[in-house]
Image 1 (cartoon, helix red, strand yellow):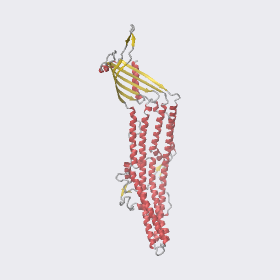
Image 2 (cartoon, one colour):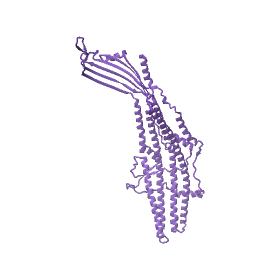
Image 3 (cartoon, one colour):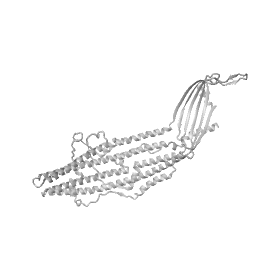
Length: 592
């Protein structure tokens, strides 16, 4: 019997770490099928998509048949004219002369990756959750403990009396208790991943008795013991999957923080590129307004010079109103440009270029005007594979599945097994009591169990239903995320197409406006009558139309570059586009 019980005990101890848990395998094939079906639905609709090369909107401007004239018009108007335009905004807020610093797009991106505050916050959170994973795993750490107690008892007690057969009473036993005892227990308790607990301990009990009319042998006495015990739930709370559930959820939270950092990086880099292109737009728009004001001032001076001939005070006032309106536009453009520079400064957060400094950033790169080809199927496939939101949605499904499995386990009755074996040795000396442990003459065996189950089990059943619904919600949320990503990709592609077409349309419009102004200047050079109406209604308004056309063309070029950025954001490839390599922590998406 001893061997059977001892063998059973050690079998439980040694087998605890390798118990197969039926909950560790998700038998719900419907969940997997729903996820696969959600992916298929998104890809099925674009399976026949062909590669597309965006084409400029065909124009019917007659000047396009005259290459020399087109070259001439691009020389006097358009983006190239303002690339090297000298800009002077006057002193900054610190009243110091304007200072500038050149910055390329790659420099802006690199500095933002190193210094952006939103990224720094996002980069710290995974370290926090990684520490939480270590704390969650520590639940299975072994605990070393020591308990020491000393008790001195010296108290009177009632003394029994018995008849002595002679009509008298004879006291029996001691009339007082005088005893010194001490206990020492030290050992290790180890929580098991199967839900049980293993305990191995060694103890020593010391007793010295000086009670009157009482004697014990040996006195003092030392009783040593060695205990091996295990407790193990067999139904509720059984299995590695259930007992490691919180660790898995915490690890998923860490993965989610890493993905959130990737998402923040995509957002930040998109903001940096958009801010860079918007700064180019603001700077060149200021140059357009600056040249328009200069031309308006020249025209106004011409009108004022004819005041003695055919210009009346109303026409002089009109000419001056043109000047002030364009000076107003120039001042506002200057503020917009400085604000755009500060927006970029804040994003890159370069310590050598503090936000408080009034130095103006001058972009050294030009917007690209190269057609970007795409394939809708490739774009959607890449997005569903690369976007961190997809992985986050899958992590949410995994968390919900873990919680459902735990809730399913909690519906089981409580059935626990306890078993222990304890060896004892007695002697008047400490070392003697331990020596006699090896004789194995005194062995205690304990084996028992506890069973309980709630009548009706309503709480556990309700919690299980809740977790099943919650998991279904995460699957629907995944489908919603996939749809949202596909919509973002298609919207970004349409923006790309539209912006590319508008470049051609607005360029043709700008060339037409430039040709109009050029023709007016030729008439002026030929000595045609420079009437106030000619100068006010034709020349000044034609100058304004050209400036507006240049602004629209510039806006369409910037919009096209922003559309490229948004497309890479939508497909989750902006990091690769910007030559930023993100290395995942080791075994980030592995449960090993």
